[in-house]
Image: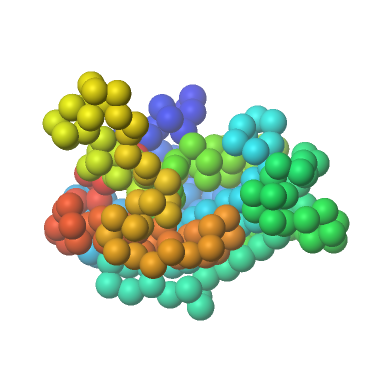
Amino acid sequence: MASSEKKATGSPTWRTFFAEQSRVCRDPALRQFYAAGVPDPDTPIQDVEMMALDFETTGMDHHRHAIVSIGLVPFTLRTIRPNAGHYWVVYPQRPLDEASIVFHRITHAEVANAPDFDEVLDEVLAALSGRLAVVHYRHIERPFLDTAVLARRGERCLFPVIDTMTIEALQERQGWMSRLKAFFGGKPVSIRLGDSRARYGLPAYSSHHAKLDALATAELLQAQIARHYRPETPVGELWI
């Protein structure tokens, strides 16, 4: 298994991969995560249990930066359950810098006595088990989680995701109007989380709090499915 991007094809091989990992993983929590499996790719999205996942980090490069906070919110197309979600601040292995503090507003004092990611990892994996992860920009949550798990448990943590940013890019940047605008030098439409939500009439939330951004991502996916897809859309057409 080379990388998460190699596996991120939206193909039925995700189920085969999870089944194999559940047999070979040495770490109990990771083995249980894989044993919970993933939905059949033909499962309608309306029948899938999902978990909106958001990390705040010290930077954008998972090789050089670290997770600072974790937000999880369980949901389906019909309901969102923020009260059943989770939020952790964790001690980053790399130091905070002033730019990241301004960005996510988590200070040195807050992380000083925070647990290491390894201390909450079993809870994170248990919360994700059996649910399809939903993120806004897959190049953060999936590689950062994989890197953190590999560093602490010596094994990979790879999984499919639905990426609301990718969906928004497909809808807003692929049409002929977008291409015409680009031809005449216009800037591409923003697909940041807040700007994407505004196009669906969703309320503006304070950004860069992991649990609140996870909630915002869950609401955005519900709106995207309602406008661009059908509840019967097979989940394999949406995951990466």
